[in-house]
Length: 375
Figure 1: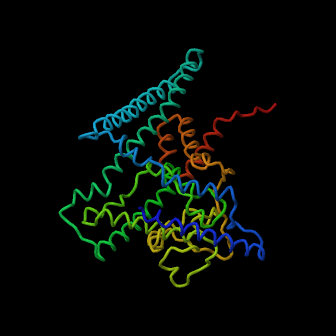
Figure 2: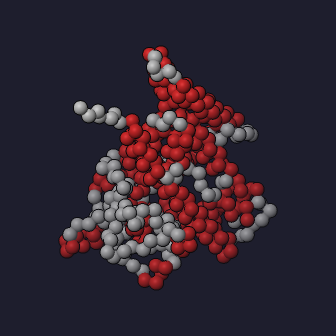
Figure 3: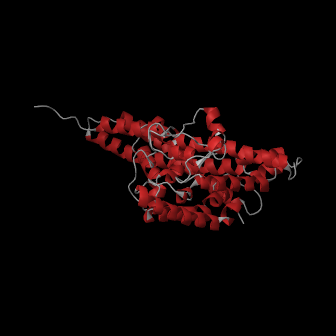
């Protein structure tokens, strides 16, 4: 069994303890954003279960890779080729529609109708091209960089099960996690995967289980890269589980500081900052286990005693609905793509930062608002 699943009794036992402790604290100090709220906790636990049971990753790896070959794989390869073909055809149709819309003579009724039809084609085509192309890209890169495939490529080496391969696997996983986590905050298409984890306005151990269910649709620094060096896939997988288990306990408000270890390890204090929507705290402290990565790469921020962390998103979704929490950013992102009239904006709404996307959306909305005429 996956080690991160095997410790499930620890999760529920510690949440029960924390809930009681927070209730006692609230009787003295009053309520706080750390308290358990039933609908919020239910959503977090539901996402935790779905993230462990959803077959999205396996389905993408099995069916969306266009070059699949070999016994039993011909059909899955053809499905991937169809998805790739849809992406290319939609991209061509959207490009042609953009051209028609840009050159249509809007002084005539015929030209206005032609532009309106072209806009409809580009709305559908732009979304289809990026969605289908993204599925092929993510499935293909995932297949090419899997630990088992890389292990087969470098099978002449086997570092065994000693301290060296375990150290390599743990440190590499943590470093790759830092960069993947940072990219999830800095690329909107990746933020759409990760944003459910940040959507809660509460912060307690249940928030740790509020995990994304759409990880298959991301492009990652390959965690399994060290398999080419001779680190066994089983060690890499266990390193993943240990990293995930460590990150569970830092989602608490009950531990204020762990002393000198704060300079090396990711701690509840550092991770509270990561979940803050205060301007000072946004996109900081992306570490998994070692906070040294944030210190090295310029994303570290200390929790300031004069600025309590405010949890949630810069614009909260105001919903505990499971579907809304999981999909709201995808919905908004593809709506922005559909309303775009150029590939520069379409790609920008997926590949640039969330902040850029929201500002650009407001800019385009302001440009299309009717201007009042005085008098």
